[in-house]
Length: 316
Figure 1: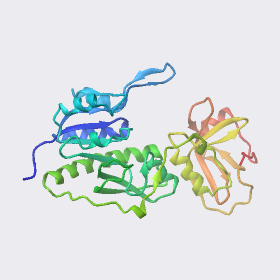
Figure 2: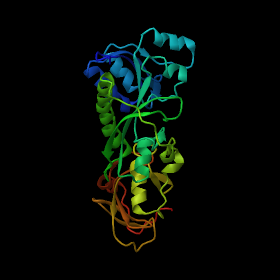
Figure 3: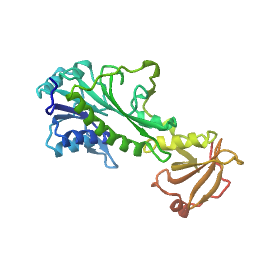
Figure 4: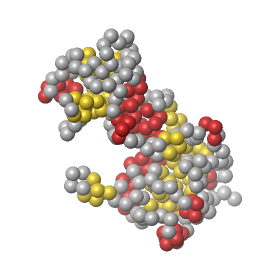
């Protein structure tokens, strides 16, 4: 008979994306017996060690927290086995789990993944969905195996990508969706109504980690592609052009569909409504900027301290 009571769960997750999933488990009465997350990291100018968001939630709830530097040791496996978990739940933990760990609990390990698998397997699915101009993305609840996001699909939920979405704003919406789908999946699992589905390998794509070299804007590209670059790299590593030898990061883009008369990279207008720039196809307006070493701000505030004249040419 299916187990309809609360599961004994060990939750593995680290960043803000994982927090809604952990909170959903707690709010719906599942028995989260332990949490595993990445070690504390130095942050800010003082480089003070700061706990990951998941650790803060776990400690506030009185849940034991493990932050191993090595996860392939038998000693660590024994520590987790001592909790007698029914199931591991993973959401953006940040490490590849070995088979001995994945299969430790009787029900195995399920993962909250930030794409509609098999599309965007890997580390940065949310960012790549925006970078590639996709109209929608979603969450996949999957049964983990030893491959890179290759396990069976258990449940999916789609989410539209708007023209205003950044990687940061979309991640917040997807994290919330992930928490809801996780609870739905556990309910179906308890009812014996969560059949696994194999991924279609021919449709698989990858989402490798982002690199800083992706951040430089090529104004020869169409405005739509540059908009996706700006939004997909916000909040990191942030798209930039160059102004007087310094990086000028650009945010809040809007495509203006008009035939371009100026050379790509030309500043056509600079006023309180934003910077309007010529691209390879159409114009692009940006409403927020950040000069290297300065703060992010609206273009109106930026221009009061540093006026820019129409005709300025940004490098391509």
